View 1 (cartoon, helix red, strand yellow):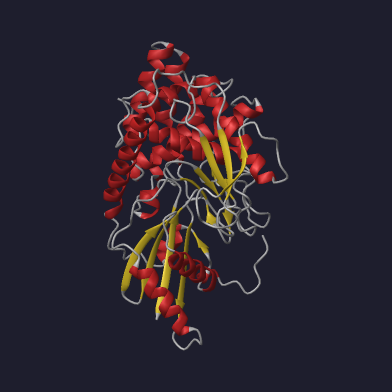
View 2: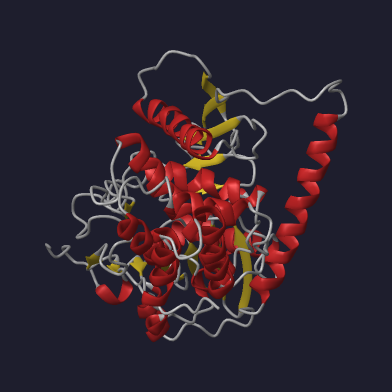
Length: 356
Length: 88
C-alpha cells in the first residue's frame, strides 16, 4: 500500500475503535444510555407499525393475498438529505441511464425473490410491503441504512468507499434489517444487536448466492465485496468464512471481527460492538452451511429463517439463546440426529457458543 | 473554541474522529455560531438511531451532545462534515 503524502496517522480520518480506545477519548459519560435509547426506539417503531396496520386494514373489505410480485419504487435524493426524494423509477418501469438506480431496483427484486421463493415470505413484512429505496443520499456519503421504513444509499466518497448499491449483499443486508424489525425485532445493542447484524449479513450473503446460483463451496462469504475503493487494502468489509480478515489498511485499520467467543470484544462503541461481534454468529452460519454443502439458503438458511420468524426468539436474545433455537429448529424440521442437527450443533461448538 | 466530533456505527462499523481548535482562526466567529446552533439542537444522551445509521458525539469545549442519522439539523450536518474533514 502506498503512503498518503503528508498524511499523519495520529490524525487520520478513519480510525478503528481499538486504536481510538488507545487514544483515550472514551471518557464518555453516557455509554449506559444506548440500551435505554434502543428500548425507546423499539417502542416507537412498534407503535408506528401498529398504527399503520390498523389504518391499512380498516378500509379493506376482505383480506387479499399479497402479490408474488414486488412493488418497488426508487427515489433520488439528489445529494440532499430529504427523504424519500424524487421518484425516478417505479415497478415495471424501464431501466434508465442511472446505473445506481438500476442496481437498487435489481437488488430489491433479488431480495424479494429469495424471501419469496426460498421461504414463501411476501416482502419484508410478509404481507407485500412496498419496497422503497433512496439513492444518491447526501454528498460523499459513506453509508447505507434502513430507517425503519425504507432503504437509503450513499454514493461513497470514492476515496475509501464506492457506491453502496454496488454489492447486492449490501442491499440484501439493509432489507433484512426490515425483516428482523417485523419479526424477532432484535434490540440493536450488545449481543441481540450483533445477532440483528448477523441476520442481515447471513441473508445478505444468501441473496447474493441465490442470485448467482452458487453453492456454499462456491460462495465468497464476503460482505461488501466491491465496495472498497482501489487504494484500500482489503477485499470487503466482513468475511463470514474468516472473520477479521476482510481488510488490513493504513487508513481503515484492521478488520476487528472475532470468529469465536474466545475473542469476543467488550465495548460500548458501535452500539456495543454490533458490527464487531456479529463475526461469531456469522462464522457459525458459514460452518453449518459449508458442512451441509449444496445451496446454503436451502437447509442452513431455512433453519436460521425458522428461528428469526418462529416467534420464540426474544428481542433481548443472547448468542446462546439463538444458538439453542437453531439446534431445536434443525431437529424439528429435519429430524433428531440428522445431518442438519449435527452440523448446526457442531458449528456453535466450534465458535464457542454453548447450546444446551 | 475546541470542537470535536466522533462518529460511530454505520454499515462498515468503522469509527471516525475529528477535532478543530478555532482560536486565532480568521473564521472563528463563523465556527462559534455554527457550533452553538448544532449543540443547542443536540441531546444529552444518544438519541434513537436506526440500524446501520451513523451516531455522532459532538463536544464543544466542555459541553457534549449527541445526535444520529437521519435526524440531523442542517447546522449539525454542516458542523460534523467540516470537523471530520478539516480536523481529521
